[in-house]
Length: 280
Image 1 (cartoon, rainbow, N blue to C red):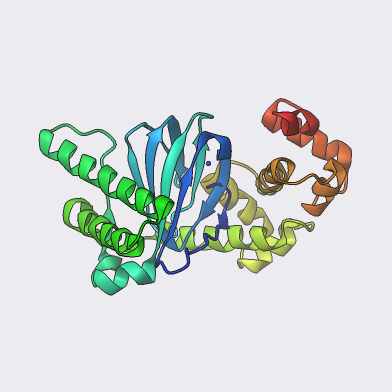
Image 2 (cartoon, one colour; image 1 turned 45 degrees about the vertical axis):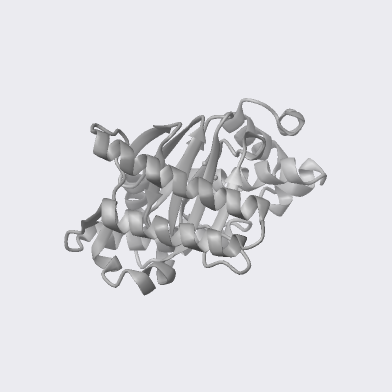
């Protein structure tokens, strides 16, 4: 709507609706969203441009115009989007889905990236059309739009359940590791503006410091400190574009007390300085 960094991302639920729903145009695009997770189903319809989603353990998939992506709750992932990406995002809370799909916890919704038959193509086109109808209803808000939106929402859930549900395998040790990663990411989200030591975070998840560093690097593909910097820079990028606060104020707000270190990390990620980034 790029969701990235081991953090829990909150999505505002629309008034009078059961879900979060938003259209993201190229002007609104954040090229990169660090690793993060939701407690909702994230459904994205890529209307134009392209989007790469990387999940843990490391699996990277690029989606092009016409793709529909379903990321389940608690799946840690990041998102990278091209500057011309235009998409629709629906966030459906698990408790809402569970009211109508009793066996929700036993299934995963798997939408193929590539359709190879006319039947699959028809199913995908129906899914695209349903999400677009939801967008039209919420955008123009004509008389009875809530009824139109909710009827399309129920149709969306039905299509996911009827056409794309697969039963899960039993839980494994990998699932337990994901739970620990979620704890780590949530902690970073809550404390990234302060110094987080390895002793502090490893104690929080009941791991020895040395093993914690190995564990985090194995599953995240980067050091813990690099990840914290990534989260801070992602927050700063947003404030640079959405506020008129000074660069120093923004950097300090998000945990950088050393302005030279901040500029170095920012340039490494964006290949430009903060002032230039703001003028884009």
